[in-house]
Image (tube, rainbow, N blue to C red; front, top):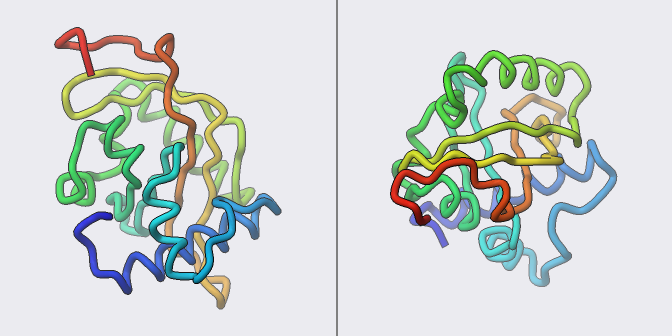
Length: 163
């Protein structure tokens, strides 16, 4: 589990899961009992989940273990990263259009784009679901994304030749 306060992880997991279900009608993770197991289930899921806050220049505030692996970062570094920096400069305009579309429709489930890890590895994400995070009162709390781990053919460039 990440070095974050347990109450933050429980609240944020609940926000991620309830918002995902609200927009898609599907569960983000398999049901976990008791509820506190949900944070562990999401952390260790075989797919990546990331989220950012509501700042003018949003900063990531969550990544599960799969996402941290693909972005080649630890929790502390990732949760200080402006989310726009997860895309290459040329792809940032496309990313901005995506986030605008998500803001308008609540979610999209067909996003594909190139991301760049801290070590310079470029990888393609496909069929990503990106959704608005909303609390129990319907207030906007940021955005999140879920994508499957890239396949070997989705690794576009590796500076060192390995991950």
